[in-house]
Length: 377
Image (tube, rainbow, N blue to C red; front, side, top):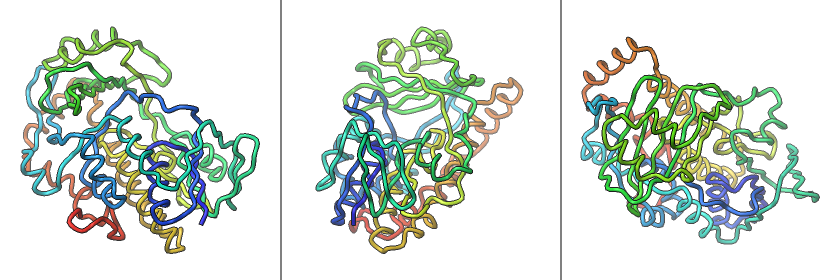
């Protein structure tokens, strides 16, 4: 079967690996001429690692990444608000791996097998029966995977009743520091602002800073981050001192519209095109990789509808959960922040641990057909 994939990001490349390893003829059309050194990190939670194992990529990703403990959350003065015992998390759910986004993309590209990645290939139209216009030529796929991001042209064309992506009310700076001593990951929650950090395997750290703001605000770069967060407790000032101005990126944050099906004719939505979510659960990349596993099996079974039935309820539920966490984290009212912080301090760690069960318990969520190698599920 011939598969055409629109978009060569994490989801598109994972789908290409999944389909190519099953013997399908796969072409990936990526608009960019070259992959930039994407300057951010991401966490791969246990469900994402199970899905990567199903693609025979788990070992390569673990080799490039580093295990981290679950995030602890503190306030700007350094007082602990919430933490899960790392050994308890690992015993129940497994490990979390932190990796540079560019490293994950490199792993995916290096395992494409027979799949062909075409760069500088802009898809300007897709029809429900699998015809694509790529640059000035027409292509056809027995199945078309729309992995073209939160602002997906494919979704806009074939799901015309879906609203535009929704701005979530806050934006984020992302940055990679220079080499710095950082032994654990964490988040700091303030009033309408927060700062997160995690060590990378090469001794650098990935950081993000989130603020409530209007879309398109462009509030500035590293100097503005220092103005807002430089007085917070360590390690925030240390991390900012280790960051160069040109290592900072700023992005408004959007959610994909909620659609009533992920499949239209021969076309399937995948990753951010289907369910772009806030980064508050660290599940964006993981859910896209899960999509790829389920999609390849549905294609092999000749039942594209199975992909929708498996993935839409789960991903939309995860997106709602991420949104709610973001709303709580970005509270700006002083009295409400005090109530939030007090509630977090009073919540037992075992309760917080159980709260991840709907996402992380059981391999079936990440590998619904049981395709991961034995011992990795």
